[in-house]
Length: 383
Image (cartoon, rainbow, N blue to C red; front, side, top):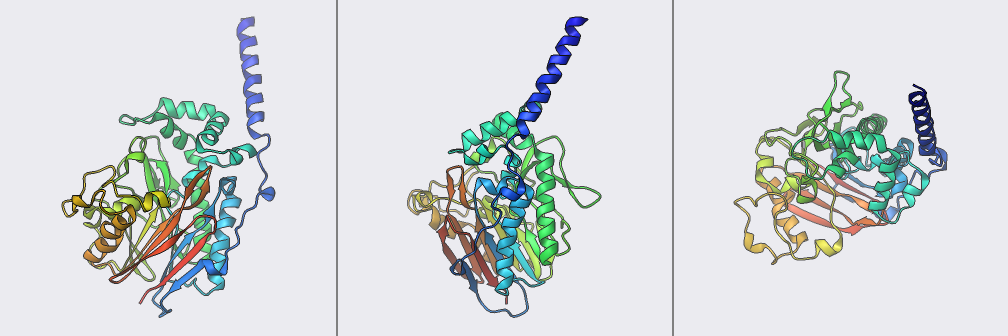
């Protein structure tokens, strides 16, 4: 009995010390640089305001420190929206589009300062897991069948409730403050849904790369958009969304479709959109120059659709393939006049994302040059 009491006492001390260690040196909100300067030459606008609304792509140049806490990320994103408003690019009919995975890095929120200074992603995630070891082990032991990369699954799932709530609060507040529709990039969450209060909810189960749309009142506008065609790098820990989902939203400027990154390459993803969609938003993670300009290796994760000329493999570049087989031509074929494909940009623990933007204006397709160290705002007026 004495041994048991002593064991419990020592265990409680160890847990208390561990919990104390976890919160030591977590940077307070006021010490974190929350905003980024938006240079005038980093704001690109096409067309004229005809009162019919606009697609507004926002590419914040993100770094790990921006994910230190909710206020830091929110105020960073807000600085870009404030810059857009100062240029007259925010109206009640504006649709703001953020990049893919913008919410997923919240897994690193409220960690020790040295996490944000790590040289590479492996070291950073090791430090995050160490600080959330019990949650990680629980998530690891409850990995659903079919998941092959259990460590990645557990890393995303261990803090899912906290990051879902933070993501929801950030984009709800921004949509409400600026009175705009927001396509909130994407976030990886287990079994995400919308609860009876209209808030983002999760449950134990498969992970989905999910995009959430917020209306100008700051409310989630269903349905949640779940990526249908995960690429090879995602397939080991995320599941495929239902190909029968209808990711179409009524907005003040017309009907909007939302497809996540690789989904824009597949005709099946457009099949349920209907015939009266005016515009499409595609949040993407993107590729560095060495990939964008390299020979295209073909479809990633799933078989190429029947309309793809597979002789293009190794013959055209990755960038040329994006222009030939993704949002541009497929949207035109689906009767969609306007579109914006917004790529992630910044430097996340040495992983540099060179954010491009692809803009569809009726039959014209424009690819903007990459940006890495400077954030960018891209506006397209609808006619």
